[in-house]
Image (cartoon, rainbow, N blue to C red; front, side, top):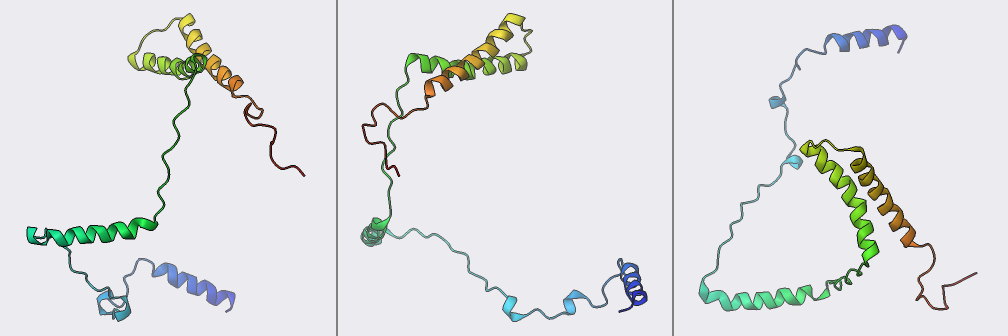
Length: 148
């Protein structure tokens, strides 16, 4: 294509942008491979009581099918927190929660109250980080894994 013919093609495309199509889409054939079969709607019908015995056999069959599924063990209980850890968590969440509550209510807070809430947040965070520790647990024993 020459540059002049490309420019002419683009002008034709732009000029025909808002025009309607020559053929109506209803005239175009729909391919049979695109037709989706219509599934009948399903109803739940309660069986009569005389067939209740058959339901028990079906339940047994379902239980046998479920036999291969993995059921995880219950999770271990949460560890008990000592008083300093409880106070650190309370300070970490209590300081900002008090400030948010006071702001929503519209209380006028004095400087020492703001300082106390922010100091509680920072102190709670620092206390929890310090208590985390960075070494192995004390009860890990003499074997601390493979070494190369």
